[in-house]
Length: 230
Image (cartoon, rainbow, N blue to C red; front, side, top):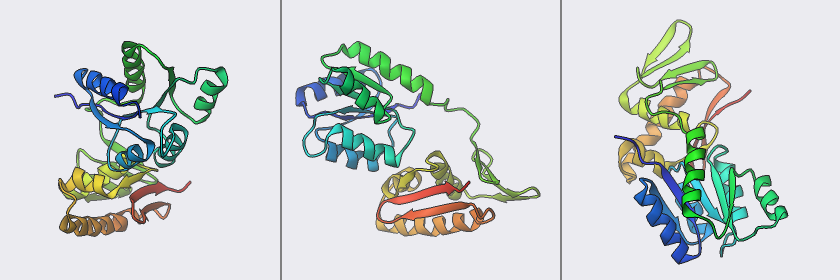
């Protein structure tokens, strides 16, 4: 069964937001709809999205600010701006924010769908791709649950260790939110699972310490970031 692609929409026009959300859901996407930038940023921190569709002019937090905050957490996630701002300088400012596309309102919803699909084809890898990750001098094979730490040394990971490291590898260089990890690996973000996660994080730190350039950083109050220093 094909995994539904997850889209975060930030749009303060309630009617347009509902139209976009309903249409994309009908086309097979999993959609989270937010009515302002602050709400959208909170949803982003607690979700795992494939693409963000952001209005520029929103209350509380505008699309420029929201885009910058999202990009600071995830440098790779595709971002599309949608706006009535149609001057060339407005469009150029949008792309200077390191977005992937800019669509001017009013727009054809079918055209928007085509743009979304085109971006996702370029950015999403096949689900059945071999899950092998290079972490500095270490090699992690998620399918075989093996972490190669030296030429002649491999560690056989438990299922939970594998699932946790897999989540961190997919977010490598970016922060993986605590609640997201808990829901993904433990299926629940309750207190006891949170304590269990901390134990497993310490186990992974011990394994990863075989390469001094690899760090599993605790981003206080947010989550964890797997980093390889160059």
